[in-house]
Image (tube, rainbow, N blue to C red):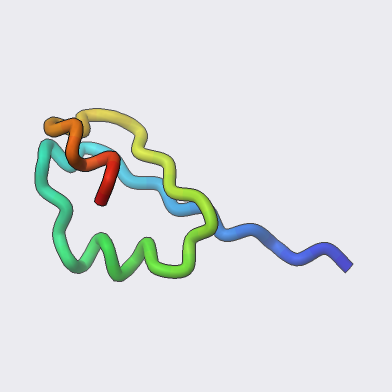
Length: 45
C-alpha cells in the first residue's frame, strides 16, 4: 500500500523564520517556500 507524503508549504517569511513555523514543518519530506523569502540564507534554514 502506498504511504502518504508529507509536504510543508510556507510563504511570506521576509527573512524571518519563527520557531513555531519550524515546528509545524518538522516531519515534512519536502518544504516548498511559495515566495517573499527576503534573505537567500532562508533557503538553508
